[in-house]
Structures are given as C-alpha cells and as structure tokens.
Length: 113
Image (cartoon, rainbow, N blue to C red):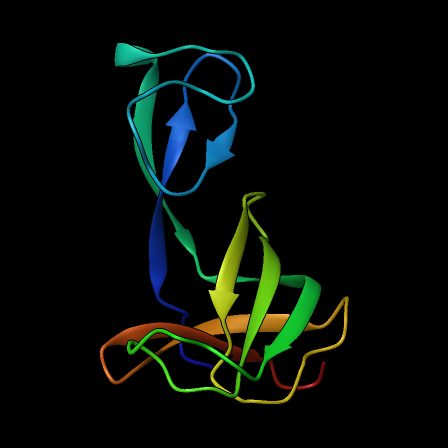
C-alpha cells in the first residue's frame, strides 16, 4: 500500500473555484475576489513535472548544490516551484509526489513513472 503524500494548504476562491499556492488573503489571481470569498483548502502534494533544472552553483546556505528545482503542476491545479530530493533532473511529464525529508518538503519521482 502506498503512503498518502503530505498535504499543502492552498488558497481556494469561493467565487470562481481557482486554487492557488501559497495560500494568501490578497485576492484571487483569476477573478480578483477577496476577503470572505477566499478560503483555505488542503490538497495532496502530488503532480506532474512541467519543467526541471539542475542547480550547480548556489550562493545560499539553506541547501547545498547540486540540487534540482522543478515546476510541478499539482493534480489539484496549482503550479509550484519545488526542490527535488534527488539530484538528477526529472523529465517533463513525470509523476512526482511530496515527501518530508529532514523536516523539509521535497518531491521525488512516483513509482512507475
């Protein structure tokens, strides 16, 4: 049995149904609704890779290069920029799933993709 992926909180627009990440109160990016029209919904950290890039040189101290950053379209719709757990770029169209590693959310290729 496959373990369920972690969940992410996304902004959910009650006016048009648009889901956006990160959850915020400023207004819907699709229709502009704000205030009480915006809620929060929890969605699984699972999706498809839209693009992927290997980072070999990075000046920050929060992660050590090399690492891979991917744009992932969640099954629920929002597109996120995520850090992959592995250091090998992931092909476009590959299914990925969120995992918690060292207290951080990372993504890995889903089995069979």
